[in-house]
Amino acid sequence: MRPAIAKIEDLNARIFWGLFAGLLLIRMLGLTFAGFPVGPDEGQYWAYGQEMAFGHYSKPPLLGWVITLGEFIFGHNDVGLRIGVLLIHGAIALILMQIAKELRLPGARWAALCYLTLPAVAYSSNIASTDPPMMLGWALALWGIILARRLPLQGFALAGVGLGLSVLGKYTGFVIIGLFVLGAFLPQTRPRYLPFVIALIITAFVIMAPNLYWNWAHDFASFRHVGDNANLDGPLMNPGKMAEFVLAQFGIFGPLLMALLVPASIHAIREPSQGSSRLLLIWVWPLLLLMITQSLISRAHANWAAPVYVAASLLVVSYLLHKNWVLILKISVALGIIATVVLPIGNLVVAAKHQDWQAKYDIGKRFRFADQLAEDLRQRMGKEDILLVDDRKLHSLMLYRLPHDIGQSRALVPGNPSSHYQLAYPYDGAPGCYLFISRNGVPALMESELEMVQLVSREVITYQTHLDRAYNIDVIRFAKGGATCR
Image (cartoon, rainbow, N blue to C red):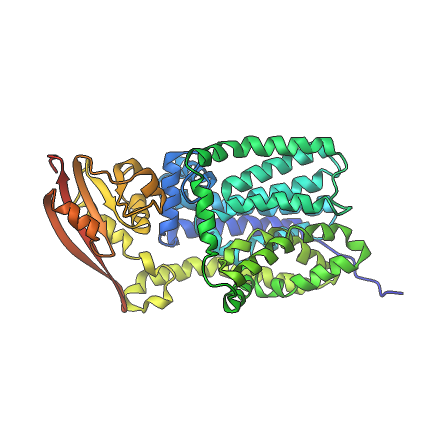
């Protein structure tokens, strides 16, 4: 006879809601008073939001829409830029509670709190990235496919909404289709009402259709960009890169929880009573193993496996409570709370001292110069000036910080378009007053162009951001086609 296991208790409701609200409040205060400097990817997503289009060169449109909504409510500032992803993480945590209840897993509130305090979530809540919107759809799809066992029409429709939103967030969402197919081979997830699957297909297609049409109209630019990111043309078999990727997952999910993911998965397979937990394995291991393989044969960024940890949070928490190892949950949550407090404080210290430190101590080292550069450019450019840039990252950094609409900027295109700006806003030599900026020196293509224009000013501005790092920015103002620069 097996020894009796202590009664499993969920986290007290008052404690949960207090910690839930407190974490969101602390993170919102961090965005308000101690936010990280806005980086080039965030600036690019902000620019996408200004277009309110159905697609863009590198990413689908959902994050841009979220940013635009945030700025509509909170204004053009770091809070408006990032509040959406912070609240999305909160919504994912609440969805996990509902999934746990639907599966009758113990510790619904513990699972939600563990997810909200994951190291990756604590960090991701401070930046606008495409992962949270994609993961929101991922969580909704998981909830829907599980709900379909009890309420088939509602469940499949919700799963379709999740699939559609996930794809609009990031194309990793297409993996969900494969997970649905794999799930059909398990008794616990096999659709019992196949006619209702049509609700999933129709709902997902209606949501994805505008972006699919945009890609078709633009020669599938976004999909080709995803293929380029995979970098399969490089050398195969990179065990070192694979080791880096696997180790990075301990930083994303947390060392304690990640170390228990394999034991929790084995427990779900072996224990007859863990049929509900077994459902979650499909939403964890296929994508995780796929990304590990990708990291071996080419490369994989650590966050490419991020959606795995939606279901993994439920799986590991259920295992810990079954083992009555509540102390590990408490330690994991405590570490996440500490990270939530330390991150904004650390950024305040770095922001004040970065010029006295080496660049390796600053995660924002590549764009500490951007605020000062934007201020200097405001003094040099007129309202009608067209911003001209040869670098996607610098273009994004300045668009966010300058009072210029994305349509009032142009990108220098040396060959085939390699960014959204080069695709949608290429420099074509039209008449006007231009302000050209570069941090890579003036390219030969631009030097040739300057021979045929009226030069207004030309200078190099140096920004010493750290003891061992400085940026030399070329700033050239010129008139083209008889235009007058005021």
